Image 1 (spheres, rainbow, N blue to C red):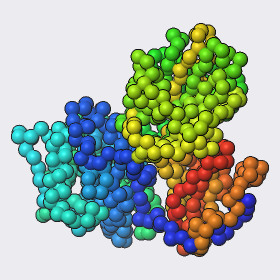
Image 2 (cartoon, rainbow, N blue to C red):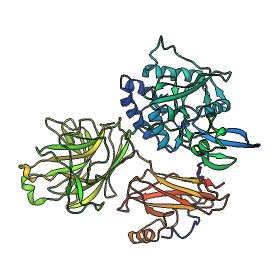
Image 3 (tube, rainbow, N blue to C red):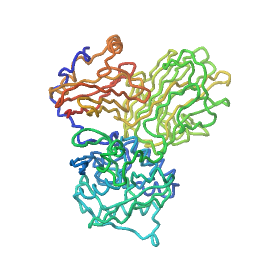
Image 4 (cartoon, rainbow, N blue to C red):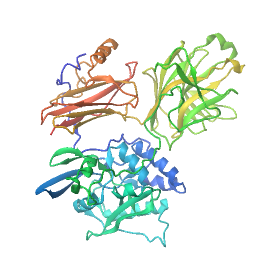
Length: 597
């Protein structure tokens, strides 16, 4: 395998998708994702914090319509020190919402969730000056449609949705990707944020004359969001006179800030971000215990225990899931309505035929649980989930559907792995399609629509005659993500001739391979040269330090690299792949392209 030898023509005949204009770094929308019209009843009556926790889950999972993903350029100019300077920044064509094209819902957010979303997507919130520029540039300017607070409950989700539908009726079939203004007040970045902690700054909602309904205001607390508020995202990366820079750098610049701000230079215009958890979930379960706050034990909190053999991470301890009283125990993650996901976990398969006469214990992972973590329960607590399990007595591996007190092994014939070892469990649920894999080997792919959503986690059930024989499920790390989230991003760096290369939202610890070509060639004819890595070849690439081409994803499931000294006008096409440690499970990103400025 010679992937690291040069930027050779490794791909042929594909039309790569250019990454300019920029796109929001969101995963693909899931096959089972809710449509916009499903949200009013789902959100109605929830406290603001609970509503935003659920919305964060949907946004992080990629439940965003396609027309909001590709950003639209907006240009501003100013004469600075006798010279006309021009800025170009990129914005969402409409306000943030959930759902799909034709059935979506613009959702007001507090500035805290808006900031968390902006941070995740490498965006910022617009300033007053930028909101005015967006309105001026918008080819679709609608008449504001306010609701009187003396007549309507302007904080109700029902009115949020009614206002959304009103805007849609005013659009009269205009293309969704068209830059649209005059429909909401913007939650804005402002110099007032620093001097007014705990407040939200809002501005805009322009009449067709260009006069805004809302002057720059900080009248509301930062936990406030009514039907008139909207979140428009601005990419952090922008250009001034064609040179790459960032929104923050321009706002803080003593000379250039008038391009984006009419409040003077703004050193910092950030709100405190919320810290809701959702995809991707990564927990290494260090000795101090779980890293994420969304975990829930069914009965007894798990604990870190010394484990032999040593876990794959090299840590001396693993997390043990066990209720000392016996029976079932689980450690599940509940955040939003989880439907489509990929769940991976490193579990110890503890093969114990010597005590089989006294019973056995079952360990595994589960998804779409709607029974409060009952796992494979069949008696007083009946499970409702899909699970991939290992039985200690005979080493049997089961792909279970648990429903109505009945366990059904979906495998067409029994499978066994009769040895004690750490193994990587993987369960994918995408729509009605399920995939079960163990150590990179696909055990089963099946269509089953019994369970459509629910919690996920680690399950344990002991069937021993004596609790003294219990050891519990031992887990080293968990990764949960939406399907097909692994992505490759190419973009020009801030320094001339530099390339930023990012692989993101993969499985922590997986190997990655990245292939480039200067010219379109035969893709996917044979994928690309040399893709048949043996472990020794991978080790050689890793030891040779070729992170452009081969490496391992970090604890966040990503890898970033800055490549300097490239010529302007260089046209690149690339694709990245990941392989799990078994080197059997391979996943590819969509191909991407970039021409360096």
